[in-house]
Every structure is written in structure tokens, then in C-alpha cells.
Image (cartoon, rainbow, N blue to C red; front, top):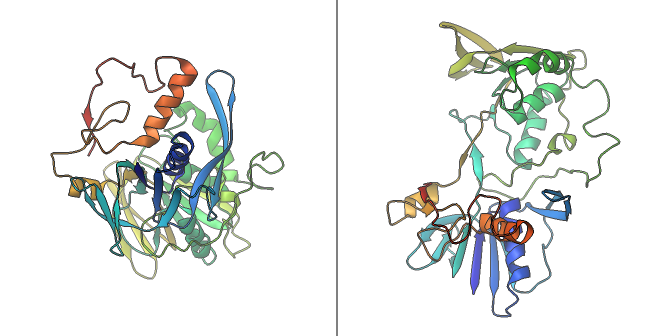
Length: 348
């Protein structure tokens, strides 16, 4: 049996290592294809109580396993032929499979493509942010999620304008009433130390440029990414200044000597300029290739991640289901009971 896993994030790596561990046949082969030379793996996994799991996330370039049946391929998939059961990479290599796992994750949403518009997704983009911040005085952050909130708190020696379309900050995580507590802390920023300073019980996060020469983003950042880079300008007298603009929508961005952002708030148009624009409005799935090369109307996935292609499984979720059955009995944590007809839903 030849398994091919596409995606070097936690899901893809966990799936590949799980297949190596579970399928002990000497004839089995597992190929992990990653667009980035950095891949992420789960270490120190153990259960805490009945329903909670604890683990560390480690980014590495070294070999994931010494098993000779495993191959890590640093490449970008450019074509999928479901009938021939093969993938083609951008360098022309053909990779055949018996079972295919797609764990290609997501990419940041960004309607404007320019070097001065930054999205934060992998370590390469985080290092680019560090470089751009060195000479910046004014930064605009668009978005109201976790990365945007963390940046507003951590950035130092720059003037920050935070544009959000919601009526309250961090609305994805907190009720509106929590703003009275959170906003003063965000406007003060970090005054000393660093995130998790003194209490971090997992491996420290380190940053180094990857060998990824493509424009495909690498594995998603972990929770401690901001501890590995300098989120500060070289200017020493600006302090931490935050201006929050809520209930607004950006409709245009112009690139001159400075970046000029036009936004609308309550029917009126406003403008704000900056040196660096950080776009943090969420992600969209990396499914373009699979949708393009799908010979049918789409790939249909049920709630245990079986598909209408018998040779293709979203094994990253399937492994979790099988594991949950062992831990929690006959029903897995995704809600599907074995033996009961699954509801199929098109996803691509």
C-alpha cells in the first residue's frame, strides 16, 4: 500500500506518522509532500482526564522518523489525476498513490497583492513582518481575530490603527461586555517581559528562514510565534499608541510613498496612511488544485471524512475519528455513530 499525504502542517505530519505507526507491513510506503522545508509535528502527547489532551507543537527540518518506509518530499503539487491515481509536482515528478490524504490547510485572505501588505501565516511571513517593522512608524491592522488582537497588544514603538468591522474588539472570542476590560490592556500593551515569560512548559519557539522558494505558504504558526521575533520598530520614543476604529469597512488601498487606506464608517469615507499594512481577516482553504482537477461535480465528504473517491480519504480527520472510538466508545467526537448512514456535504 502506498500512501501519499499532501501538506506539512500538524494534520499532515500527524497523519503520515500515524500511518507509519499503524500499518506495519514492510511493503507499505508513506510519502509526505510539503511545500515548505519546515514541517510541524506533535510531541509529548498525553491524555489529561477523560476528554482533554495535552501536547507540544514543534517545527522542524530534520527527519521525522527513521523508518525507511517514510519519505519527506519538499515540493509543490501542480496536478492531480484521480483516475490514474497520481500527482505531478512543479518539477515534473510523478507520484503514484493507493490512498491520498489532502491536508493542505488554508491561506490568508487578502484582496490586495503588494509587498507592503502583509499577511501572517507561517514563519517566513512572520520574519518578513519583523523586517518591515524595523523602519516603520505607522502600522494599520485590518481584522478582528486572534492574530490581529495579539499584534495590537505586542507591537511596540509604532503607532497602530486597528480597523475592525465589528462593534467590539475580539468579538470572535469575547462578548462585547469584555471590551471594557480588554481595551485598556491592549492600549497599554506589554510593558515588560515577553509572552509566557517564566511559565512556558513547552519547547521554546525559534525562527529561521525556510528554504521554501515558492509562494506557497508554509505550516500555520503555533501559539507562541510572537516570542520568536522582534515586534518593535527601531524608533525608541513612539511607545505603544493604539487607535481603534470599529464598525468600518475598507474599500480601497493605494500605494504611493505611503500606503493609503480608504474605509467607510456609518456612511462616511475616511482615510488613514501607514508604512505597513497588516491584513488579518481570516483564511480560505487551499482547495483550488483539487477543485480544478476534479473530474466530477465536486469532492463529497461525509462526517468521518470518507469521500466519493474510494482512493482518497481526508485521513487527518479519519485518524482522529478512529482514535476517538477507542477512547470514547462507539461514537467518535465528530458526532458520527458507526453503522448509521452519514450525511454527505459538498465541500469543494
